Structure formats: C-alpha cells, structure tokens
Image (tube, rainbow, N blue to C red; front, side):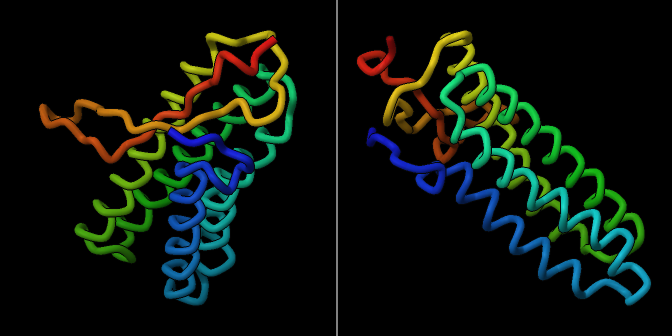
Length: 159
C-alpha cells in the first residue's frame, strides 16, 4: 500500500482517463451527423467521470470528496447509457461494447468502495496525504476479481 500524492496516483482515475481516451477515439469514427450529437455527449460524460474525481480530490472536506465520487459514478452511468445507444445503432460491435461496459463497471465498483471507505470519515477534514490505495477482491458472477482496487484512509493522518 502506498500513499498517494495526487489524484493522478489513483488507479481508478488512471483507468477512467484511459477509458475516456478510448471512447473519444471511438466516437470520432461515428457517422458525421453523430459527431456533435451522441459522440459529443459520450465524450463529455466519459471525460467528466475522471475530471470530477480530480476536482473532488482537491477538497479538504471529506463530504465534498464523497459527493465528487458519487457524481463520478453518475457520469459513468451516463456514459454506459451512451454506449447502449451506440450498440443499438450499430456503431459498436457486441464484443467492443462488452469490453467498455465491463471496464466502466469495474471503475464503478472501485468508486463505490472508495465512497464506502470515505463515509467512515464523513464530516472530517483531510490532511496531507491521507488516502492510500490497496488491492481488493470483488465477487462478480461467482468469480473473484483481484484486479479491482480500494482507496483507503490512513487513520494516522486524521484529526
């Protein structure tokens, strides 16, 4: 477990940023009339998930950070909705849809665990490098997935 110095160190942020870049590239392959409709909406929601998480990191109030995590989860759901529409319109193969959808589900679980961990410290102020990241296991369809991560609060740095 290592201390995190920046939102850029969060694995969930890194994963969301990488997913946004994939979604952005994919959306530019849509028919021209979709570039500023569905494509634009999808690019904005996928970018917002990582951006909101970064914004929340800067808050010294745990409750504000928790709200940012919750909003980032909402942006993931919006992006998944756009992916559903992409698939229905034939812009995504079923395999590519499944890959992206599962990656966003993984990020959502990571954010949920972060939210639950932060909720133990609701109403407190964060000081310095108090967030730590560690491996966590999740049950998914009966199989354990060790690659998902948890964000943890370091008690020694809390007031």
